[in-house]
Length: 343
Image (tube, rainbow, N blue to C red; front, top):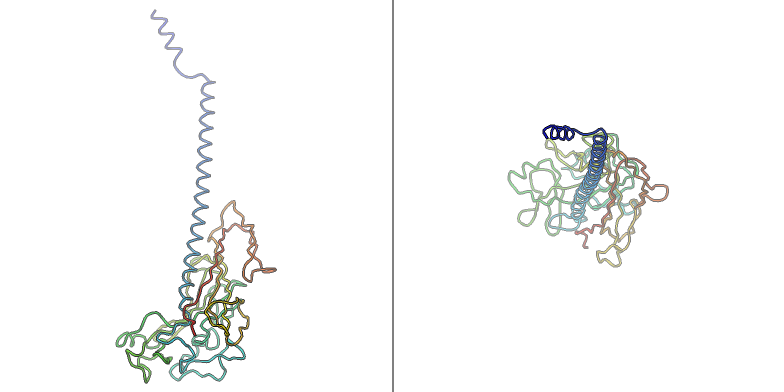
């Protein structure tokens, strides 16, 4: 009896070679499945994360341009740039060029280099509250390796949303190009002394805002990563200057169309859209801007190829974009109405 029990226990210890191989095969199969699921989940997470980043970049870039566009042609207490006494008028024969007879007021003449740095009277061309070109044509050089070929530029001119109070704030603004406006007229100036004939509360002081958007080939942190940038009127060391500011990296293209209201039926609705550089008949007015942004991931994605054709705005025909690389992209567009165009 004792021998039988011992023999039974001996037979039940350990696994046979066949059993061990079967167990290893099952374990290997389960492990391979887990690794496959993990890899696919990781790839899906990366794809979703890349898509979210593209959407975030597009949303931020578009919201920045939109907020600026909605304030275009805003001049404080008055709504007409042609009533700014010492501001330029446009050359009716060659809009949006400035009337060649215009000369800067004495107070601003010492800043002519900055005012003309990005183009003739670029910093004070107030009647051209919206100006667009189908390539980089600013007289001031683009940052880094230059602008992206074929991308549009968009220049917005307006007064700031904040009033510069008298006293110390006005003293601190000496050297900044400003607008003093009443209900019926306005004046450009740069000193800490209000122009003659203007007194608060019947007039306001606001900084002049000029922003020229473009797409650069590089970003501040990484070469070969395009970025949305802008040239902006600023102040450094008590004098006006043109600064170059990165808005957001990852924007590969900017395209715009201008929505124009017929002069014989001024209802503030865009009756037709034109490409940058198209002559707009006298009396018609820009009341809206259609904006396209092509956003690109900052890094290529292994195993992905962007085989799409991007056909939009002026990117048509021979100008369509067919990247064929490993960067993910997102194309967004929006039509933005201008608030301050009522005549």
